[in-house]
Image (cartoon, rainbow, N blue to C red; front, top):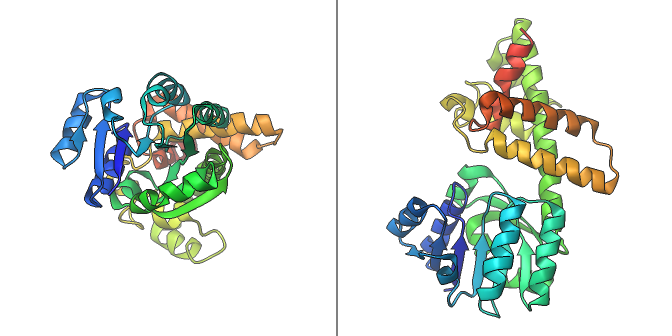
Length: 295
């Protein structure tokens, strides 16, 4: 049994922390939203009134936070000054590579092993414990934390040094965003030209155009019952999150000197959909924008 401090009990963090509790670990949780802490306590977790209190006695500190600025603040002001000296620090947020590497360097200077471990799989994967973890940081730190990540995920990959987990995550989501737009455009076009969605799905899902977006997350209601399109685009992964990840990808592409024409267009389209009010919908709801624009 490990003693774990879990900071950030939002849509992703809460089910991740819950799975650690279910695996009989001692998990103390904190979030700036009191209701999230109460919900965690109601499901067997230990509630902390402050982030500092959450850290007491922790062997591992796991964070799941919205933005890079939050990660910088929480680690610089709270975790690095107050966590037990032998604790392993694990940030599961999706943030920019520069921030991930800078915070890891500061943690290392203070004597901590720190890993960036962003995830893929959305809220469904968090609930089911089937997330993919992309982990950057030292091999020793990875070996120590892997048993915990195995509880929360199905696939856990040590990518390399600090920041490389974030690189892998934004590379994945760059493909995801582009693929979603391509799938939406194709399905909209096919239906407008008179082909039934079920026939289109049956053909493409068994042909060279097949993709995870189509067969697992189809943006049109009907063919994939579990996809958000069948529940009015209630989110597993919001448009706001996809827009953020694509902006991170564009920033990283600029740093690498990598041309990303399709990525830049996907980023622009998701930003437009976000500004039009689609931020809280699942990112597959961009189908509505694409279908309307093509009418």
